[in-house]
Image (cartoon, rainbow, N blue to C red; front, side, top):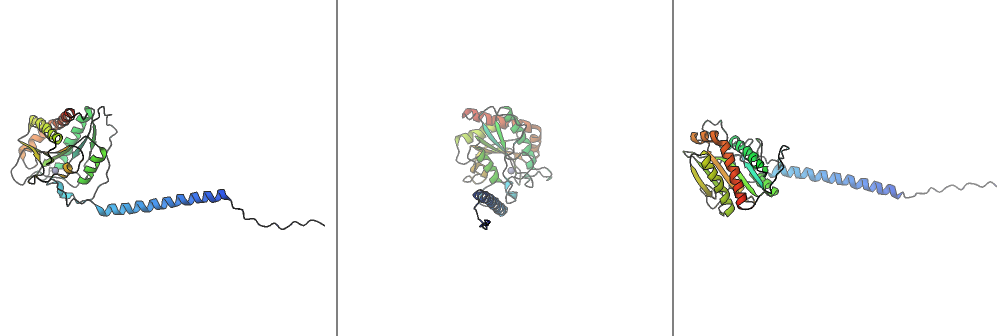
Length: 274
Ligand SMILES: [Zn+2]
């Protein structure tokens, strides 16, 4: 009798290697989907949160567009930047930018944001020539919120922070003033004083002094002085509505930048920061 082939029982073998591969693919897909959802929601939250400057104190002109869109925090890196040769790290903060033009002259054609960027870029150059690592809160005409300026400074863990502005006053006023925190820290005050000494030699209409706190409110502080972790000062390079201050600025802005860089360097040297 011919041996009959027994009908083969269909066998359901579990192919473990396939199961594992399928599981890995599934987990990877899930991870991508979850990442997508999280990114989407953080983007949406970012859109609606904005910057709440309502509780903060700012300089007169900085408040103009503090409620406007918050910009992405990016620490600009320039490829042409020379390698720092010292241990000193300094943040240079050019006030305003983008649609926040800052103070204006009487013709309303000259903007604080442009004047201060011009000086800030030169300060960067002079400090880099000394081997200092410089972090710019902006190096183009863009809006950066006050919160982001402080975050950039604190995340960079810089040694010193210098904010550059020009002043606004509805009336007659002229001269240069430098603001430091009302806590009157020694290094902050020295930083302001060293810069002011240089600016006075560079040619300013009036030395209005190193001031503590906030204009008219000595118990408050400018946000960039209050919320930065390192010694800081805010320079007001003359009044935008004053012809003499504008003329002196145009004649001497390179000297102003040099004075700021030298003041930073002297302070760093005196307090062993470099
Ligand atoms: Zn300003």
